[in-house]
Length: 196
Image (cartoon, rainbow, N blue to C red; front, side, top):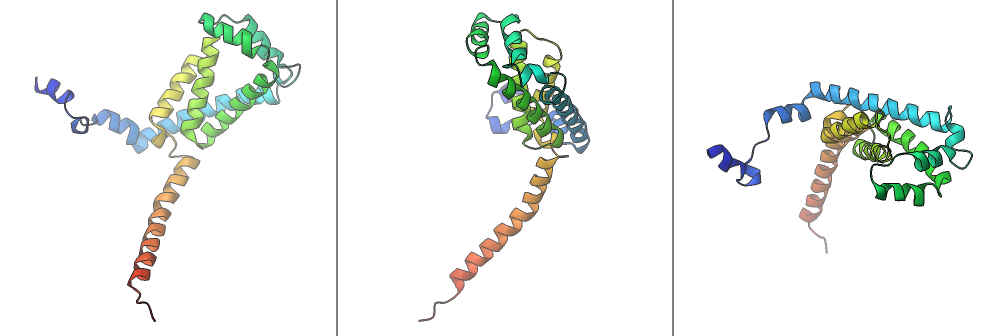
Protein backbone atom coordinates (compact mmCIF):
# COMPACT_ATOMS: atom_id res chain seq x y z
CA UNK A 1 0.00 0.00 0.00
CA UNK A 2 2.89 2.37 0.72
CA UNK A 3 4.22 1.83 -2.81
CA UNK A 4 0.90 2.87 -4.35
CA UNK A 5 0.76 5.94 -2.12
CA UNK A 6 4.30 6.84 -3.11
CA UNK A 7 3.39 6.62 -6.81
CA UNK A 8 0.65 9.22 -6.44
CA UNK A 9 2.76 11.42 -4.20
CA UNK A 10 4.46 14.61 -5.30
CA UNK A 11 6.30 14.12 -8.63
CA UNK A 12 9.61 15.34 -7.21
CA UNK A 13 9.41 12.62 -4.54
CA UNK A 14 9.36 9.84 -7.13
CA UNK A 15 12.83 8.46 -7.77
CA UNK A 16 14.03 7.59 -11.27
CA UNK A 17 14.47 3.81 -11.60
CA UNK A 18 18.12 2.75 -11.61
CA UNK A 19 17.69 0.86 -14.89
CA UNK A 20 16.41 3.97 -16.68
CA UNK A 21 19.21 6.06 -15.20
CA UNK A 22 21.75 3.49 -16.40
CA UNK A 23 20.22 3.39 -19.90
CA UNK A 24 20.20 7.17 -20.27
CA UNK A 25 23.39 8.21 -18.42
CA UNK A 26 25.87 5.34 -18.66
CA UNK A 27 28.98 5.80 -20.81
CA UNK A 28 28.70 2.16 -21.94
CA UNK A 29 25.12 2.66 -23.09
CA UNK A 30 26.20 5.94 -24.66
CA UNK A 31 28.43 3.94 -27.00
CA UNK A 32 25.52 1.61 -27.83
CA UNK A 33 23.11 4.50 -28.49
CA UNK A 34 25.76 6.36 -30.49
CA UNK A 35 26.28 3.27 -32.65
CA UNK A 36 22.49 3.07 -33.20
CA UNK A 37 22.40 6.78 -34.06
CA UNK A 38 25.29 6.54 -36.52
CA UNK A 39 23.82 3.42 -38.15
CA UNK A 40 20.42 5.10 -38.58
CA UNK A 41 22.17 8.19 -39.97
CA UNK A 42 24.03 6.11 -42.55
CA UNK A 43 20.77 4.44 -43.61
CA UNK A 44 19.14 7.87 -44.13
CA UNK A 45 22.21 9.17 -45.99
CA UNK A 46 22.06 6.18 -48.35
CA UNK A 47 18.37 6.83 -49.02
CA UNK A 48 19.01 10.54 -49.62
CA UNK A 49 22.03 9.97 -51.85
CA UNK A 50 20.04 7.53 -54.00
CA UNK A 51 17.42 10.23 -54.51
CA UNK A 52 19.80 13.16 -54.98
CA UNK A 53 22.59 11.63 -57.06
CA UNK A 54 21.83 7.92 -57.51
CA UNK A 55 19.42 5.58 -59.21
CA UNK A 56 16.28 7.33 -57.92
CA UNK A 57 17.41 10.80 -59.07
CA UNK A 58 15.21 10.89 -62.17
CA UNK A 59 12.07 10.24 -60.15
CA UNK A 60 12.78 12.84 -57.48
CA UNK A 61 14.74 15.75 -58.93
CA UNK A 62 13.52 15.49 -62.50
CA UNK A 63 10.28 14.65 -64.31
CA UNK A 64 8.20 16.76 -61.89
CA UNK A 65 8.76 14.39 -58.98
CA UNK A 66 7.11 11.45 -60.71
CA UNK A 67 8.26 9.02 -58.01
CA UNK A 68 6.44 10.96 -55.28
CA UNK A 69 3.37 11.51 -57.46
CA UNK A 70 3.18 7.81 -58.27
CA UNK A 71 3.73 6.81 -54.66
CA UNK A 72 1.11 9.25 -53.36
CA UNK A 73 -1.54 8.42 -55.96
CA UNK A 74 -1.15 4.62 -55.98
CA UNK A 75 -0.30 3.92 -52.36
CA UNK A 76 -2.78 2.50 -49.89
CA UNK A 77 -3.10 5.16 -47.17
CA UNK A 78 -3.90 4.10 -43.62
CA UNK A 79 -6.75 6.62 -43.26
CA UNK A 80 -9.07 8.31 -45.73
CA UNK A 81 -8.10 11.80 -44.51
CA UNK A 82 -4.46 10.95 -45.21
CA UNK A 83 -5.43 9.73 -48.68
CA UNK A 84 -7.20 13.04 -49.27
CA UNK A 85 -4.04 14.88 -48.22
CA UNK A 86 -1.91 12.78 -50.57
CA UNK A 87 -4.25 13.22 -53.54
CA UNK A 88 -5.19 16.84 -52.86
CA UNK A 89 -1.81 18.27 -51.83
CA UNK A 90 1.14 15.94 -52.47
CA UNK A 91 0.26 14.83 -56.01
CA UNK A 92 -0.29 18.38 -57.39
CA UNK A 93 2.88 19.62 -55.65
CA UNK A 94 4.98 16.53 -56.27
CA UNK A 95 7.75 18.48 -58.04
CA UNK A 96 8.90 20.40 -54.95
CA UNK A 97 7.73 17.77 -52.42
CA UNK A 98 10.06 15.25 -54.10
CA UNK A 99 13.02 17.62 -53.73
CA UNK A 100 12.03 18.27 -50.10
CA UNK A 101 11.89 14.52 -49.37
CA UNK A 102 15.28 13.84 -50.98
CA UNK A 103 17.04 16.72 -49.25
CA UNK A 104 15.33 15.94 -45.92
CA UNK A 105 16.43 12.31 -45.98
CA UNK A 106 20.01 13.33 -46.69
CA UNK A 107 20.08 16.06 -44.00
CA UNK A 108 18.45 13.82 -41.40
CA UNK A 109 21.08 11.19 -42.11
CA UNK A 110 23.91 13.70 -41.96
CA UNK A 111 22.65 15.15 -38.67
CA UNK A 112 22.33 11.72 -37.09
CA UNK A 113 25.61 10.37 -38.45
CA UNK A 114 27.73 13.25 -37.14
CA UNK A 115 25.58 13.85 -34.05
CA UNK A 116 24.64 17.45 -34.86
CA UNK A 117 21.23 18.74 -33.68
CA UNK A 118 20.48 15.14 -32.77
CA UNK A 119 16.98 15.66 -31.30
CA UNK A 120 15.87 17.69 -34.33
CA UNK A 121 17.31 15.15 -36.78
CA UNK A 122 15.72 12.20 -34.95
CA UNK A 123 12.36 14.02 -34.82
CA UNK A 124 12.50 14.84 -38.54
CA UNK A 125 13.42 11.23 -39.31
CA UNK A 126 10.52 9.93 -37.21
CA UNK A 127 8.14 12.31 -39.02
CA UNK A 128 9.38 11.05 -42.40
CA UNK A 129 8.84 7.48 -41.20
CA UNK A 130 5.36 8.45 -40.00
CA UNK A 131 4.44 9.83 -43.43
CA UNK A 132 5.75 6.73 -45.20
CA UNK A 133 3.89 4.36 -42.86
CA UNK A 134 0.68 6.40 -43.14
CA UNK A 135 1.02 6.26 -46.92
CA UNK A 136 0.99 2.46 -46.91
CA UNK A 137 4.69 1.56 -46.95
CA UNK A 138 5.77 -0.62 -44.05
CA UNK A 139 9.24 -1.69 -45.23
CA UNK A 140 11.88 -0.66 -42.65
CA UNK A 141 10.03 2.47 -41.54
CA UNK A 142 8.62 1.07 -38.30
CA UNK A 143 12.09 -0.07 -37.21
CA UNK A 144 13.63 3.27 -38.18
CA UNK A 145 10.90 5.08 -36.23
CA UNK A 146 11.59 2.92 -33.16
CA UNK A 147 15.31 3.69 -33.44
CA UNK A 148 14.50 7.42 -33.73
CA UNK A 149 12.36 7.26 -30.56
CA UNK A 150 15.20 5.51 -28.69
CA UNK A 151 17.66 8.17 -29.89
CA UNK A 152 15.26 10.91 -28.77
CA UNK A 153 14.83 9.31 -25.34
CA UNK A 154 18.59 8.99 -24.88
CA UNK A 155 19.76 12.00 -26.89
CA UNK A 156 22.28 13.25 -24.32
CA UNK A 157 24.15 9.97 -24.25
CA UNK A 158 23.48 9.02 -27.87
CA UNK A 159 25.02 12.30 -29.03
CA UNK A 160 27.96 12.18 -26.61
CA UNK A 161 30.15 10.91 -29.44
CA UNK A 162 29.37 13.59 -32.00
CA UNK A 163 29.28 17.31 -32.61
CA UNK A 164 26.57 17.87 -29.98
CA UNK A 165 28.77 16.16 -27.38
CA UNK A 166 31.78 18.29 -28.30
CA UNK A 167 29.69 21.47 -28.12
CA UNK A 168 28.30 20.45 -24.71
CA UNK A 169 31.78 19.68 -23.38
CA UNK A 170 33.15 22.97 -24.73
CA UNK A 171 30.31 24.97 -23.19
CA UNK A 172 30.68 23.26 -19.83
CA UNK A 173 34.37 24.11 -19.63
CA UNK A 174 34.29 27.57 -21.20
CA UNK A 175 30.94 28.97 -20.08
CA UNK A 176 31.94 28.51 -16.45
CA UNK A 177 35.15 30.46 -17.04
CA UNK A 178 33.35 33.20 -18.97
CA UNK A 179 30.75 33.52 -16.23
CA UNK A 180 33.39 33.71 -13.51
CA UNK A 181 35.43 36.32 -15.40
CA UNK A 182 32.32 38.41 -16.10
CA UNK A 183 31.30 38.18 -12.45
CA UNK A 184 34.77 39.22 -11.22
CA UNK A 185 34.86 42.07 -13.73
CA UNK A 186 31.44 43.30 -12.59
CA UNK A 187 32.42 43.01 -8.90
CA UNK A 188 35.69 44.86 -9.53
CA UNK A 189 33.82 47.68 -11.27
CA UNK A 190 31.48 48.08 -8.30
CA UNK A 191 34.25 48.07 -5.71
CA UNK A 192 36.44 50.59 -7.57
CA UNK A 193 35.97 54.01 -5.91
CA UNK A 194 34.99 56.86 -8.17
CA UNK A 195 37.49 59.71 -8.38
CA UNK A 196 35.99 63.18 -8.40
